[in-house]
Length: 165
Image 1 (cartoon, one colour):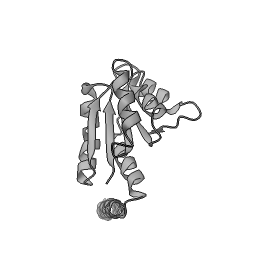
Image 2: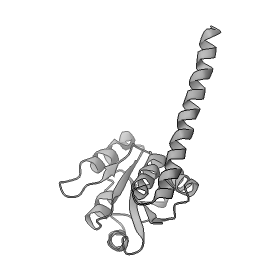
Image 3: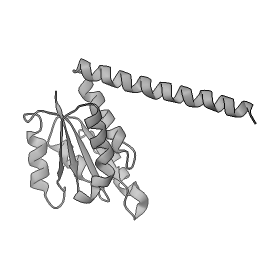
Image 4: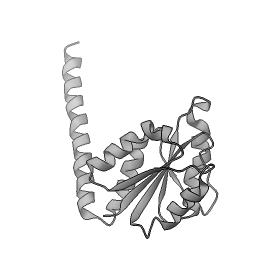
């Protein structure tokens, strides 16, 4: 099975990234996580991205806040799919990160999830890997059925509560 790379601009981003790690573990997807900054350790980020395919990765999540150039730097140095995870910062509430991630130039695509949307970043990576991994596709199908059943049970409970009003 292909691995997912998670690159964080800083170790302080780990709190936001934890749901992505938990989701990958839940699905049994191998991963590596590193704190590589586009600005302070660009050589390490570029080397990771450039070598990712030969090192068994199938997708990379780039998590960063503020200027948030990490996902773009990764995408510039790999042909693997890159998922940008904007991280909320005290100033501008993460909009700066979101805007820098979704406004990539032509030829350097980066898929972007919601601000602090770590679980969806992992799920999108898993969906990408499931294109060529049938067992992973089956796990995703089961996950979606669980979500559906949970929501239908909530609706059933809601209907009873409405009747009691």
